[in-house]
Image 1 (spheres, rainbow, N blue to C red):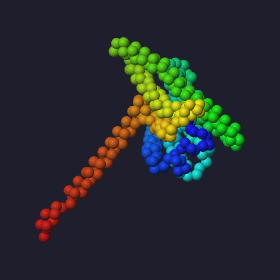
Image 2: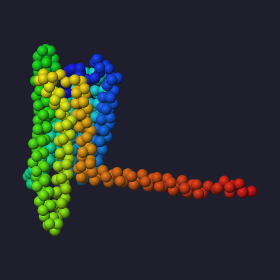
Image 3: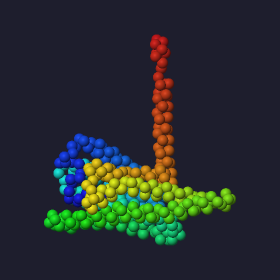
Length: 332
């Protein structure tokens, strides 16, 4: 995912042959993406946490965990890499933090995928299996494993350069395989049965008479379709956003080619974009979160309109009490 753990050569910096001024477009896009990451994920976290109905829903808890990982990606990675690209920094420590946050985002996405897979494919077993304690355990795993993986390179930090390079190459190959390629495959594999089951349920409901279809069945079908839409878009975005990174790492680590700087920059923008797009996927396609956000927006607009109306009425009343200039001239 990231480049060599102790080498910043692939980051655009003042030490590179590439002029920092020529990379203004890159840093501008990173900061714009950062604004969307922070604002979007903050809205998701606040929306879920302030409503008990959303907060007590286990799938939404997985979403909040993922949103926290994505939020930290925008808060930490973008400012830190910008600062260290133009100033002296401990790049080894920075890469450890970056990898931890990116791995946490991916692992939380995988846990959320597992939750939706179990809920759709094994709905009855899911009701008894997915307790609050097990959900908290899965979320803890999604944070602990990335931390362990990200600190592994510390074990050879003080090794001889030749030995260190060998360890790093092996680690980067395994990291790309386990952290990036495997999640892509698993998401595609789990998406197939989810899609087939939801399509089957939709056809069964469509074939039934209107009198045979109760509100509960219709609500369940809508929730399942919403799940498929969210899941499909999340999987698609993950594969697209991490595709360049996978290509770059495989090509570089297996010495098949030497990816140009432009490919490196695009891959970095894309995997940051994944953290920016996830909250918008939830807010627009997940029904319960979308409804709460719509209610909150409607309430804010109504209050704003009432404030404007009161201000206009106050201004009109104030003007009506003032004597007209012509009347003032007629006074003795």
